[in-house]
Image 1 (cartoon, rainbow, N blue to C red):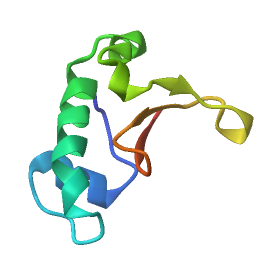
Image 2 (image 1 turned 30 degrees about the horizontal axis):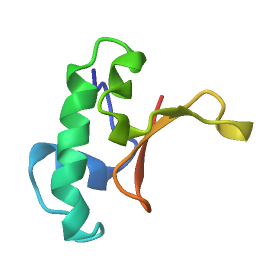
Image 3 (image 1 turned 90 degrees about the horizontal axis):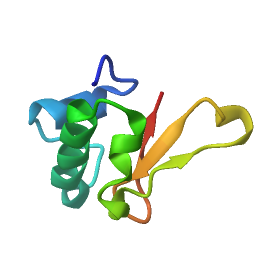
Length: 78
């Protein structure tokens, strides 16, 4: 479930507004991924579909996970 956003632009995408700072071609995909995130009960629910490429991050981001929007963009999850 989404509790907060670390980015105003991500929140805009979530509520259906277009962000001028993010490429148009990723915004619909990002909204779909955010819906998946909001509907998930557990982080492991995001393993499906495999295109999410859920991964636990390392280094100074070891508390975080990410899912991919495309090759260049991803969502960082706490």
